[in-house]
Amino acid sequence: MGLEVNEGDIQELVEEHVQEPTTDELMDLHRKQQQEVIKEISSEEQEKTTEESLTSNEIRKMCKMWETVQNFVEKHHPNKAVAMRAMNLFNDYAISHFHEILKRRQKQMSMDRFLVKEKESSESTDSSDSVNDSESCPTQ
Image (cartoon, rainbow, N blue to C red; front, side):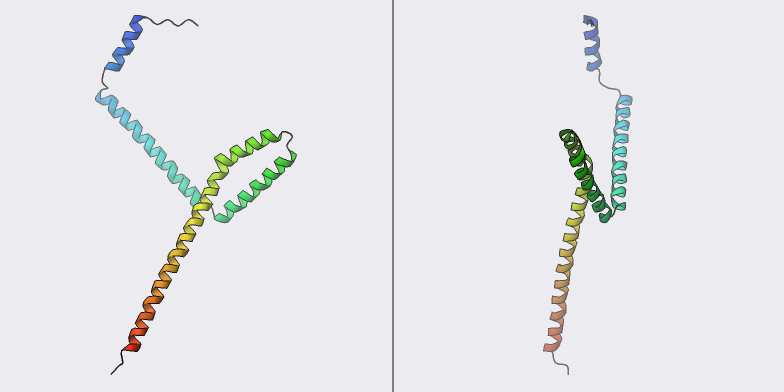
């Protein structure tokens, strides 16, 4: 496979890179970049919608089923090393996504509980203060 490069080819390549892009070329490049950003944003929105449509119980059930499949394959597959590699890849690229969703939801629930307790304790403190104030001021 004899590729020959001559002086003319090199000169042509250098000239192509010396020329600055035209306004039309820059606009085209900008349009393409915007389209990529729009595609990325729409895929993120679609992912969020999909994530929101799944309940935590559905995710837990799926994880339990995956655990059952893993145990079965570990026991019965003739080539354990290949099976483990495949399961680890699937865990890393697919199942970990669902574990992260559960972790985020658990963290959010913990934060919500904390905030509700804080709000309730501050409200009870405020109401007890008002009761104490009314008791300390005699009515005439």
